[in-house]
Length: 479
Image 1 (cartoon, helix red, strand yellow):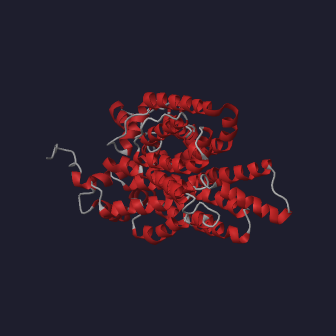
Image 2 (cartoon, one colour):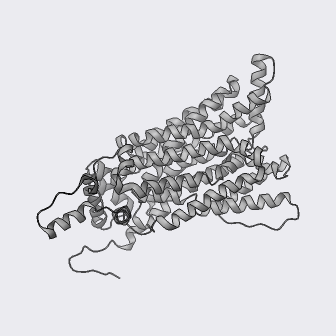
Image 3 (tube, one colour):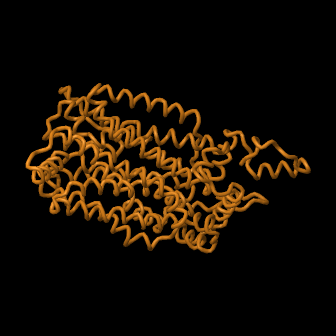
């Protein structure tokens, strides 16, 4: 059924919003080779941590004829865990340059280098008797995750039609969760989490990167990147035909032209200029709050130190690895199913599972969608650099400080996370609008009202209605 009005272009047929095979396969190739790396390496050192510490100690003994003391071991293991988010912070700072110069797809392909090389180094670290290779590789893998965590949602958000943008946007977090879950499975002592299998466990991170290198080149670059940033409308149309099928593309191309006009009016934005613009103030604040709230919710305290948390709850070490796998299942299905147990120690497990389920429904996937939607093409690169820096810095803080906080106040450490979650929820309710089914330009208009600025097209209309333009004070202009 069509609603055509005189003087307006016909709406896009509903079939254009379907998940075409090319779009589906491009999403799977990009997400599995990118977001999966983040999740896998986030969790892979958790369950077999005693095996890795034993390797560190044995290597140290062969070099110095004495074993490490507890403080040195704690320092080395803290570095092993926290170097990953530190590398992520470094990756988030260079992703802006890469996505603009190499394209969204090109950035993802180049980024595979930062997964394959450390996979090889970690795979040979036991033979080389060098635990330093593991620590160094964790930094490089962090760079890989930092780049992909920003470039992937940008790529998927620009490939998707507006009615599927939310679905594809959540694929970043879905594949992060899948990576976490598979790492938990492979890390079981009976599989690879043992003295013989851990080099293979660490080297497996190179497999998704190889698969992406073999498959992603066959899928199109972001059509928005091609048209808006490269000015190549023919390439954009060709990409859209592959992604949408042989349907009328004029409405979507027109939307990209409108965004291109907005970008020309706005110009290229650096991070410093983004922070200074009144027209993007609430968007910038929103992604900072969303990403800090996501990481400071405490989810990575569980990802990094699940075994320690379960042990403090009274779970025997032999069973904690299976409880960790159980938390991964909850993370994927995003539901909570459990029976009441009489043992008090398992009440803590139920609470953790419920917490993971709640996080998986909202704080985990939603920020990846919103951060793509609330910025136009010209400001998206700088916004993702800020977003990534906040994400990885807060991730690092949690990974580095949580053991000390837990030692000091025990289970009460999660009360801090609960308070942060509450404040984040209040901000979302009061500030962030509903973006479902809206174009990037429409969302930009909503935030323009909140920022109390007028868009260039609105100013043009006022100029036509009011006659000759008058000069405004500098503080009242848009840019």
